[in-house]
Amino acid sequence: MGHPVLTHAHQSQVVGVEDPGPSLSPLGSVTPDRDRGGAAVMEKAPERVRKPSPRYKVLLHNDPVNSMEYVITTLRQVVPSLSEQDAIAVMLEAHNTGIGLVIVCDIEPAEFYCETLKAKGLTSSIEPESS
Image (cartoon, rainbow, N blue to C red; front, side, top):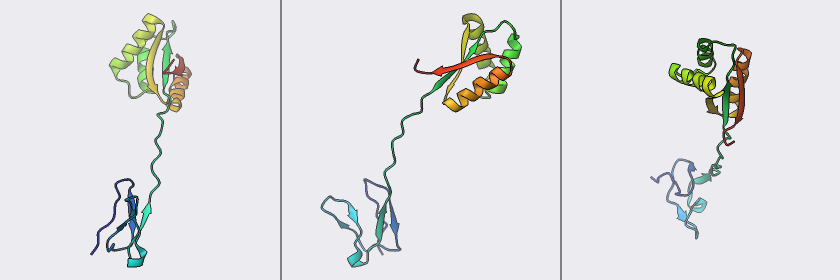
């Protein structure tokens, strides 16, 4: 009984039940050997290398209206990944410097977090991480 054939360069899927033994082409890759009743080897397309998505900073701006406790609670409601300590740090950064970094993420969640913070009465913006 033959064995499934896998090349080193590509993942392959063996079609058929048995492989009586592959033959090597001049380039050294495994090719189907239909004359001897071999299994056909289906090559999968190589995976494309994906560039990482651009990341965006969600910023919280200081405001004189909302209490520190409200800001902390709202940050934790809107961005569940923030711990209590993270939310306090963001609030203090915004309070002391005028602007605090909430989170860095892809554009879709960044827009969602920013708009949700605004809807709850906080001042927020987004900008590309690289700026």
